[in-house]
Length: 196
Length: 196
DNA sequence: GTCTATATGGGGATAGAC
DNA sequence: GTCTATCCCCATATAGAC
Image (cartoon, rainbow over all chains, first blue to last red; front, side, top):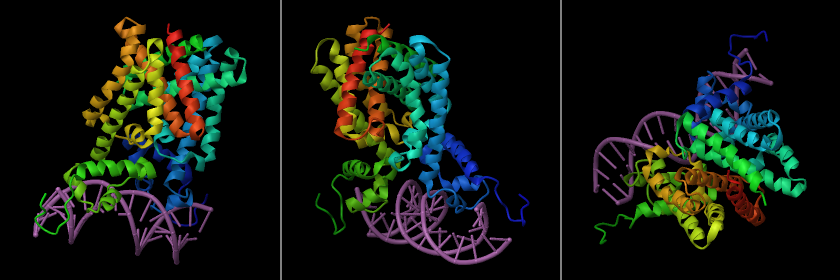
C-alpha cells in the first residue's frame, strides 16, 4: 500500500483481468474477447496485462481453471445432496445447470480453442469433475474399468446436453434449460438402468 | 471465360474459398483461420472474398452448412445399414466417427461462435440429422413426444462423446476414437433399454 | 515490481478504379 | 470480379518512469 506517487497502481490487476474477461465474454463471446478491450475497461494500457499473463491464451487458461472449479463444485454439491442410485443423475443435472448459469466460463473451457496440453492446470482443475461422477458410479458397478466407462458415458451425456443447450439446438430461454435438465436426469437414469 | 485482360480471374472463388477455409482450419483451428491467409493461398487480394461473402462469419456459415450435410449423410447411411433396435446406436456411432473424420467441419459447426439464428441455412442443413435419429426412435416409442425426447437424448449423448473426444478428454489417437465409438454404441443401447 | 509510452505487423472491412 | 488504397482494431514487444 501507501502509493509512492500519483501514478495509478492497480491493487490486483491479475484478478481484475480475469473478472473483466468473464464480463466481456458474456457480452461478446470468446471470439470477441480482446486484451485491449479488457485493458481499456480497467483503465490500464494494453501492455499491462503482459506483466501477469504471457499472452491472451494464458489469461483464457486462468478463466478455464475457474470454469473447471465451478463445474466441479456444482457437480460435487448436487451429487452429495442426493442418495442412492440417483446420485449420478443429480451430478449430471448439476453439470447442465452450471453450464447454463455460467455460460461464458463454459464457453472458455470448450470453445476457446485452447491447447489444453499446454495448460496442465486446466486438466488438474477438471479432475474433481470426473471424480464426482466416478464415486457414485462405483456404487453401481464394482469393477473399476466398468465404473470408469459408465462415468465417461454419463459425463458425455451431460456434456452433450450442456453443449447443445448453449448452442441453441434445444431452443432458447428457461423452458429449454428446464427441459434439458429434466432430460439429462431421465437419460442418466436410463443409462444406469440399461447399462449392459 | 475468355479473360478480357491480363488481370487474373478466378473460376469459382466462392467454392475455392470454402475449400481453402477447411484446409486452413484443419491446420490452425477455427480461431486461427483468417480471410487474409485464405486470400493469399488463392492468389487473390484480401478484398476479393467480400464480393462473395459479407464477412468472415458468412464464409464460416457456408462451411457449417457443409458440416451439417456431412453429419446428416453419415448418420443416415449408418442408420440405413442397420436393422432393428440397433439403428439408433449405429446412427450415434456414425455421428462420432464423422466428427472425428471431419474435425475442422465439426469445429466450425460448434466452436466457431457463429450466431446460428443469423444463418437459417445451417439449421435447415442440420434438420436431416435429427430426422435420421427420429425415424428409428419412432419404432421404439410410438408416442411422438416421447420419440422426440428419446431422439434428443441420444443425439446429446452422441454429441457429448464427439465433443469430448475432439477436445482430448478421452485421450488422443485412434484408440481414443475406437473407445469413444464403442462407448457411444453401448450408451445408446443402454438408453434405449432403460428409457422410462 | 507495476504500469506507461510507443512501435511493429497483421487482420477485418470499405470505397472507388479497372 | 478483382485490384489498390485506406482505416481502424488488436496482439505483442521493448524501453523507461516510478
